[in-house]
Image 1 (cartoon, rainbow, N blue to C red):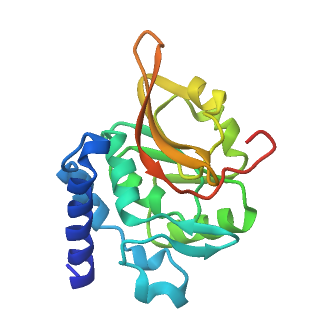
Image 2: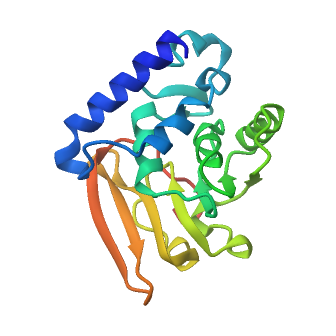
Length: 219
């Protein structure tokens, strides 16, 4: 294991412990961390930023977008309780890093990106790196991907002003969704949405966050 990756995992574990009072999780599932460590983050950041690829911070990837902080990627992945048979929807492909992490934990990832250039770049990158259980499409993530649902889990990697109703509809009973909600000016919160087997939807605030905004005609 690269020394910088080993240090990153140490920092993630430390931050998880420090935020346990918010998240309710003093440690992450070791399966999640193991698969997380197998994804080469340096292959998902612009070449000029590769020296910082394993720093525990978000990094710009162009087009006004970012690759999320590694701690946040690991935490949001863990909150989904991913299982090998799961079908997952991601809203906000970006560079493809979060999708790559999830793909090592679930059966299939469907990922939506509204910026055509990012969608094309992510699709090419993921194919070149051998992630063959990820399907990327350029589209409005607010509307989800109904023809591929329902989904066992949904992860939204951009801040929404409210929880998009189409995503709730596409979440399978027993499913979970991690989504940042709020306004960057007045504060966003990471929410964990769960849908019970009877269709009842519950929401729990995890912790304060700061994500780029979800865009689109209905966002």
